[in-house]
Amino acid sequence: MKRKFRTAPRLFASCAIVVAVLATSYAAVADEEMPPPEILKKYKIDLRHLSKQEYLSVMRVEHLVDRKIEASVKEKFSDNLLVQVETEAKKLYPYYEVGDVVQITVRGRTVKGTISHIGGRFIRVDGIKVHRDDFPFTAFKKDKAKKFQEKYIDRKFYGKRDEYRDFLAEKREKMIGKSLRNNGYVFFEGDWLTTKHVVDIWRSGEFQEQAQQPMDDDEFDFDFDF
Image 1 (tube, rainbow, N blue to C red):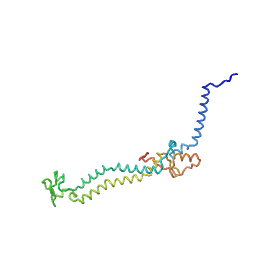
Image 2: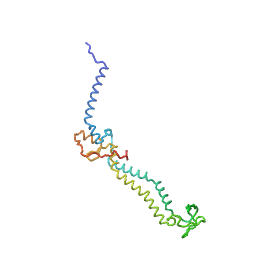
Image 3: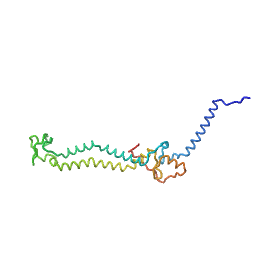
Image 4: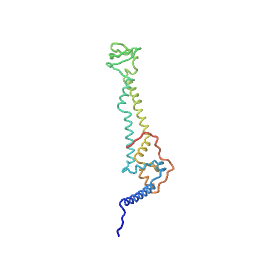
């Protein structure tokens, strides 16, 4: 008597059903091993970071943030800006010597030419006598001109640059926090742990919710990503 064997389509269908059942079972187990949505949301756990082969160290992220801060300062307060401010300072607080070309308004009339003589009361500009008081107060006082130029440059460039650097320094911790999140870290138990570490804690059954909320950095828009 001949034995009857299942046809190939039926055999493949049966195998497909078994594979589907196993996959469903595995997914159910895997889901049970993952933190629930409310925990993922509370601690901002992004499970996509589980597939990362290597996480940057916290120290490395801090170093990169510091480099980004300094790069931002240099970009905002560039050498070109310094030259511009220095030019403004010399224009506001000029110093003139014989041979310099000047342009000055005297009683509604513009006098332009080369200084040929500097006297105690009058300055000669291409043969025209101009009273010394019609020039800026620093015009013929080198030390005073230098002093006021330096004060202007300190205020308009170096002072503002330091203020900007201090502003970024105050935001440094938030920058680091956001950068760590972007690189797969979770703020848990008062420390920054990798996503894999936190999920392992959950799987081990040792996950205990904190009374305090994780560091909130969502509203800070200075974003660093490496």
